[in-house]
Image (cartoon, rainbow over all chains, first blue to last red; front, top):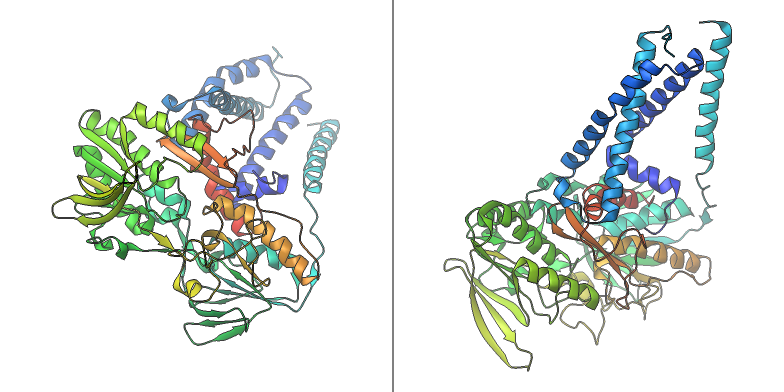
Length: 119
Length: 441
């Protein structure tokens, strides 16, 4: 890569998804993260019961993210060829896992406004 | 919710907004524009012409920029290999020329007919004559299908014949012929021309992809793979050639060097090659096929070859433009530059090369307008995500000196078949290409 600046990366991602979908995705991520921070601040504590369910949902997010990347790119687990492939695969899985966990935690907190006693 | 909590959450939102503002502050500021009345004519609205036009519009104030190209369609040519393996539809490679050209550029939608570098004029097929201060020739190249006796484009897709270079529809028809081979087996025969060619990795990619698909469709033992080429190695960069030789060995693909495809007998399914062996003995050999992939000789367009801009003592039958290989500036006409396929340099007929070449020409062109000399140099950078299977590729990058030039040293090994390199080809490459067309990558 000749010049890997933030502007280049944003330009490339915009071309990848189209400007509307790209900024919609960025907004979604920002909104969910902001809501997550909001419920943490609102509740002033982490609800362990919600956190447990969020953790249990992590594998679903991980598998969904890996499956999505493979389907979109006509590839398969058998194509993993080197160490960097394993790292990228784990990265995709981790992103999916954490993203989904945050979503699940935030959704629970927004639906049940009163924090659980267990927290 | 109490007032306290509301304030706290508002503070959280403000913090997030501040974070975003910090990110956008990291974006580079636009350089000040150069004032000029220069008339810059760019022949060709392909990858190179469009990318340069987009960048010049951002850098110049008051310049007249004219792009001459008669093609209404813009082709994303790196996608043709994927179309010819049934992985993408033909439409994946297609867009309109006008989708990419920036405002402030005047497009003349007709082909250039003649260039007079002494009088500094370009005439179009429609009879317009333009006078230029600077000329950038980037018309691409022409595929000389007529050079192969018995072959014509209407054969593609039938009788087991493919020709993916000929465009999106032909790439799609190529897959029709190739997929029949992957289902029924037989003899697969893959060729490349004796001339310089665009993306010298593409003949290998097609061979690897069809072998991979055949191995999982009809199955090993039901098909033979033959790679018959004029050259004496599988790739121009020796270290890559060795790696490909090893892969060919593992995959059971036979190499035939010194083979120039001369004619095709589509009814008998026989291809005739002029051969030269290691000892220099010449001859002719006929090879049978069930699937034949044809890549014809490639040359500069006639408008270039008739303009006097071509090398007089190199590539005589091909007519590439005589430019300095570092600055891409014409060696006899300093106000002329060449970009992309038509440039007479030893490497660089790929979209990735164009991405490296365009900033160099931009630099020297702007310096010339200001009466100075540019400083950037093109080192022959060429990149080829060399697909070896559906799902794997080697990210091969090299320069004029056949050195490997890794973009991600220590992270992505150039000679390793990796899923990550495949992801780049599948997902990131077209996006980067499009960003380049807009002058943003």
